[in-house]
Amino acid sequence: MVKNILRGMLTSLVLAGAVSCGSDLESRVRLESENNNVGDSNLSYATYVANNEGRKSKVYDPIPQDGKYEPTIGVGHYLDRGDSRETFKRVLPEVNYDEVYNKRRELEDEEIDKLLSEDIKIYVKRAKNRIPKFDEFPLYVRQAIVDGFYRGDLSGSPKTLRYINNGEFGKASKEYLDNNEYRNAKALGRPGIRKRMRANAAKFLKYHEEGK
Image (cartoon, rainbow, N blue to C red; front, side, top):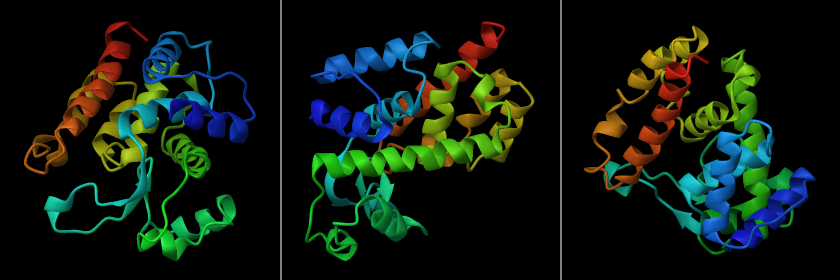
């Protein structure tokens, strides 16, 4: 599965290299997080997000308990977002969007990879627009930021963004977890959210403690 993930990602990002199993992917993500000079590209953000988000070939509802249907596919691609249909047309012109939406068609691994590659570019751009000094941060901080924008927990927290833009990463780490979805993750049936958000908060705190 990971071989397919990286094959599609590397093709779309015009990068070289491959890994062959889940443990290798996790090792590469850790390596890229620790060394700002290794894999510093959209691939590093994509592998980080995919490792956290998981991947689904068929439409699913990530939080069915909340009473709001949120059709999602691939690596957390929300099908009801405003530009989803246009994204499909641009990236997957051979795929019938309505068939996917109505669960009559699943996505192949390579199609999921192409969609993820496009989505990562969108969210990196959004992160840069909201955080002017984005490119000045170490890779591990940027990965956490992109992941937070991809999920929406960071882009939806004005206070956390203000702390980041002010260079107050200790406060950003605390504010990031002051979040209803984080507190209610178990009740929502998504306890994994807490682990994911704590990992991102820890990166902000690490940057603060290491004196930038």
